[in-house]
Length: 210
Image (cartoon, rainbow, N blue to C red; front, side, top):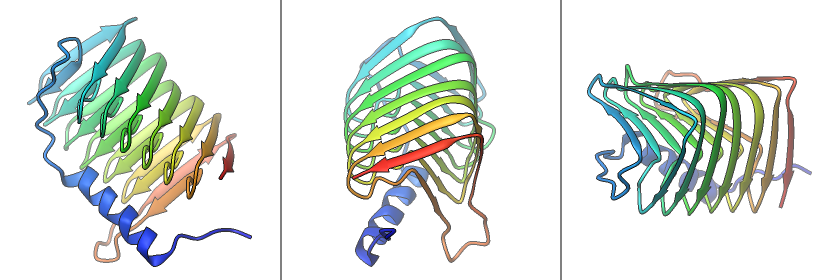
């Protein structure tokens, strides 16, 4: 029998989504090798491994119209809310050709995040997250387009793909989740806003284990 979240769990998920969308994202990183594009700046990276440690430190981060072009990259983060790739704000873009490998460790540390109008396009993706409420992919009023690849999450409430008034498109994905209330796909819509929530996948497989 399907398990549906309780009212308390639903409110918690809603609170987490709103925090991700509207939190201050002015994070100063101790890791000099992270990739940041802000205020219309553009960055291009190819064939590198980026490793970051610390609270709220994303390995690649586009904000306020910044654009990042990535090719055959690997990123690893460790820390609370330390996302692999974060794209925030209207006009901000992240585009990845080749393969993008993302590994995150820490509660709330999501693999790929697109919020508040941010857009991410990834040709091939390989995401592994370990931590509670650490989704593989999250679109919060943002857009994500994925080609083939895999998404694996391990932790309570860590969905494979989570859309909150956002849009996620994908094809040829293998999605696996392990943990209490860790669903494969999760779509939420705020009742106060006339804005749809979409997850559109083709030729993909989803498995969950609790």
